[in-house]
Length: 616
Image (cartoon, rainbow, N blue to C red; front, top):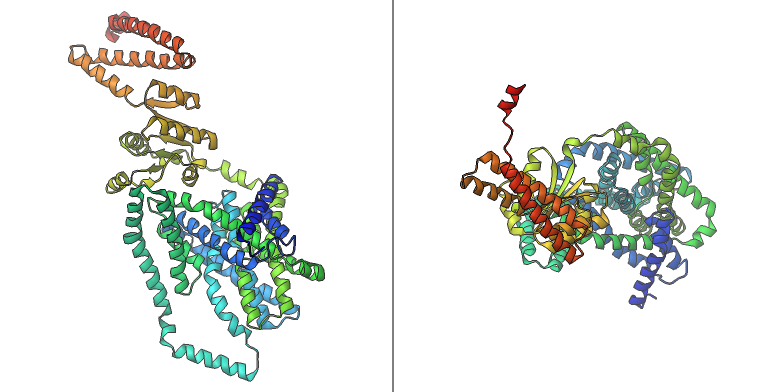
């Protein structure tokens, strides 16, 4: 199979299509479906695909993409606000979990240095599983989501020093090894490069910030102006790879570099477009990663030592849940959030495979123990979807944690509104809403317009509002109202159609071109709309009447009367819009009635309030 790449890809995709929707329909989650697909087609299942290590290395790029997208969703100020969780939750969790696991494995007659390596490897959680689950549950902005992210960031940063410590921990206690260790330490102290490494890292970060502001953003603007969507997608992927390579060359985790790159572009007007372009690649590669984990489960080990393997898995998951729950309690999280954080991060992570393999190649870990631990890591990943399922079915209904949190929040003054189109029409609507304190996300597809209004301090994101993936990235699912202010009859209808199909709960206010276009919007269920030239023509007509000698009050009254009659005609003619003869007949009859009504309104003398008071 490994010699036929097309056949291997077909098997991977077929297994995904067969098992992932089934797992989702059964309420087990997509992650468990991917893992089951990997078990089925892997070398220990049907043996359809055998090279799980190569597939996992390729698929780990999905984790890099995911962290880039997470970074895009975080403002630098948000990272600074999370500093207490990063230090209090992240660092403390890593140290306590590693120490507890090292103690357990020492009690099981493992050597102390080996136990420390195992503890450090298993203390890290799966970024792929935790954040993918958080995004699917839409809790990335909650206490549980932010707490999980803080812990995972610390773990990603800690990968490099852990890998650096493995060779030192792998050294035996012989005198030759001790001399070698001492000599290595002296060499490090005498090497000037070791002292300037922190400065190099700081310089790399500063260079990345400078490049992001003065190089990447102008480049994004230039590519956006070309209108070539494929080029913009290629540029987005290049940014992810470049950010990962930059930190990899500096000796840090590629995933951390991707995250930093995303954070630096978080306040860019092209954030939503980048996110919508990269999201499909991330989802596919993450699914491939989960499949590779399922393929790595060696059932020969499972059948040979089932009790020992079960005890190892239970020890890992139980220790991590207890420590995470206690730490989350210290941060005064809601009980539901504490349990959710503990379950989300209860598994061993993808970096455990790397650390354990590194330890085994350094002769710090016997082959038999390595095989058992690798299977244990994969099995802990399979426990997370099951624990989440139990949490949803048994625990969450009793706690009603998420419901209580939401009913107590009031956001009447900062309800979320998405405005699609920031031309002259959209600007007027937006300025009225902003004056009332509403929170809005503004999106336009004209880079020149975006650059122009940015000079006046207005933040507009780049993107095509007709794309469903961009609407998801812009948070339309959580919005209360979407204002369609773009130009073009067909484009407005396409956006309204997508909103109704994919976000039926979101209210729509739309720009209508004319009467027929307004009817098309009404057919889609859009109740709030305005014909773009109607009110301006009405206002001009009133001014013309004044110019011709009519009193301003009378002109204003006639304009309001015309508006009422015409709006009623718009509603009445909607029912017969598909019957051309009936439609034309109704319009002719309504025009005559409108003329008669307007003449009556013109002849009617307004009631003088002074006369009314005198009669009382």
